[in-house]
Length: 178
Image 1 (tube, one colour):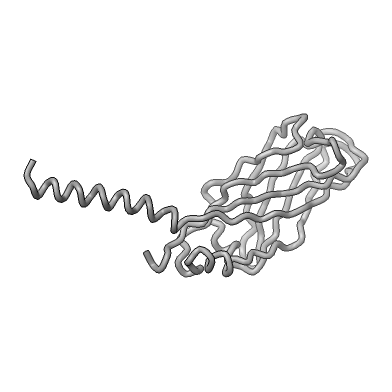
Image 2 (cartoon, one colour):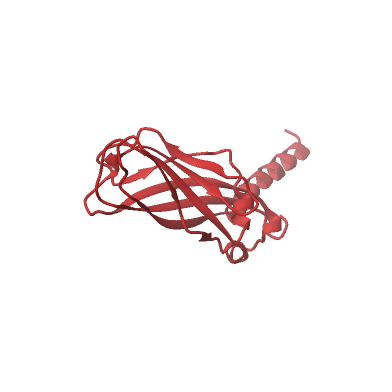
């Protein structure tokens, strides 16, 4: 191999490994938690809509602590939506047939971000199927957003269920314009 080809090959290898190294500095996760309550319905197979209080994003602070700002963010994608039964103690998601989670914010179109059609029984924590193609950048840039939960029950229940929603998003940004 000629000396020039070796130099180009080494330069390309260095460039490719540098790009992978830079990714860890230009990508980070943001987490949000929200508690919701599911009130007993009148009958099973009843759709229930649950609106949550607004969630403050603190995105400017998070971006700054990751050496970026919103002008340098390429995209924000949903990584995970996990639900956990907080109370009644010892209960699980057996009461639910399906669940959908939507995100909304002022000036933005309400968007479905996660769902689970056949909720497993005997599970007090479930992970939903996330919408991988939704860019949540405009929602996270806002000062606050709301999660809206739509469920369908599969059995009658008489107690209020308190559920914790943990949401993790992945931010793909540039550091100092790189």
